Image (cartoon, rainbow over all chains, first blue to last red; front, top):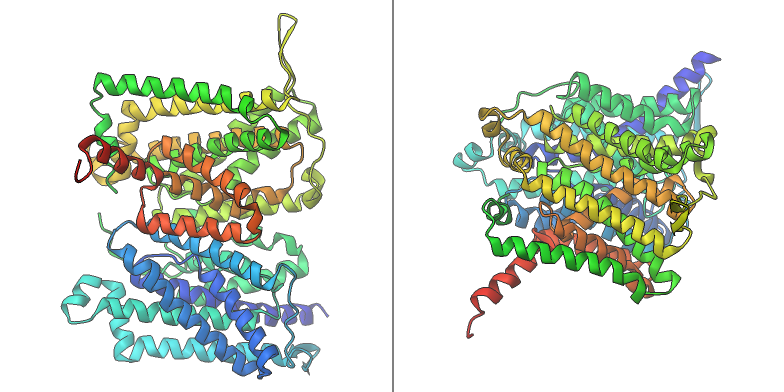
Length: 294
Length: 338
């Protein structure tokens, strides 16, 4: 009995964790190339969720296609925020200004969504939530199967893209040393734009898959992003492998805290872990050698 | 970020000193006059909230603008000050001013504790760590129901006891005007002290650390210790705002200290102009009153709020203080054609 609970919660944790990974990977990719944080990333998750919701309900499309729509909406938002905020502010050369500007964008987006969608939570139901596979006393819904399949394929594709394609290599070159990469004929501006598009598309897609789990309100993304920040730090800022590992750990923490302690304690446990990590090993689980501009 | 205002202050001409004294005098007169001009409950309440927000903005500005530590969790120190002082009063019957000192000290120590973590980290790590700290504090306030009554909140918090000297009652803080004078007087005092501090060698040390910590270290300045000190001061000021808030509003709920509150305070500092003390004062007043004025447009007022923050960063990163300086220069040297 107890082992089934442990296993069941392990599956729930991995499902949740893989979604957190998608959100956190976006943050980490942007941090990798730009050493910047996009605070509005949270609202890309929310808007992705709403895009999928309305695409399903107004157009009557299937859930899987709606995930694709959320992906596209995220991509567009990523392009916009880079063009409107990060590109103009890069010239000013202050590391705090873009973060503060995106906090402003975030407040703006949340309240625009509040004005349009209202404060009442939307019930996001997919046809796959109720179809359950039973296996050795453990229940897995098709929804969870889809989430795990889509996120692992996405993460694998992203990984392959970064490792094997020319663009991916150029992207890593830019994140290691922007100036030298520029000297090698790589246009960093285009790559930064590409990074924002990919990162935000991941956030939008994650939103469409998180929506059935979350309470879908205009502020839904905030609870996710706060954990994504923790994941990014626990995993090591700018580090893809570390982020994946940390995301799964946080997902598991969340499901086991819900089972054995109290759902209200999730954030406390996650952030206590974050503070402990910062105290012991601020470079994250898997640290990357980074040049310090001393 | 280079701020011309700071280098100007190093050698103060006598006229500037006189102008500053005039400024303080005018500010004191304005504080005295305001509740007499706005004599209804609604505006007097807003004025006091303004004064509390100015206090919050000053505390954050000291951390952010003067030592460059990106604190995204100022709501935590605000909340700690409010809850610690109120719980001491309500649960243990501690006198208000003792609880006030305890709340301020607790917030200050919490700030120093967080900063101790953060001195080894740079910019964004501190931002996330402080945000995480604010989330933890909020969740504790929400979930430690036996102590804080969680989302139900604490009700019926009484205002500070009347000020009685030699048997004569000087001020009764159940009166809105008296409470406004109390908070704004305290805020004014904090402003004067911070103003002295940033113009003293301590302020120059902090500026040196903010601009280039490595060079400052080569001059024998212990950057970490000064950052912890500054964070402690700023957090303690935030705690004081919390102590006033609880006794002013009479109710405490954790939602008042959610991280969005930290962003509001941040917006006040940025819109006003971080790294100056006068800027955040006006930033706080503007952004406290703006939503009241914009109440007619409902939810959209926060859209305006967010837009203001974004556009200020994009086009006038020095905030109101920078705008005022530009206007001043124009006046001094004359615009084109004058």
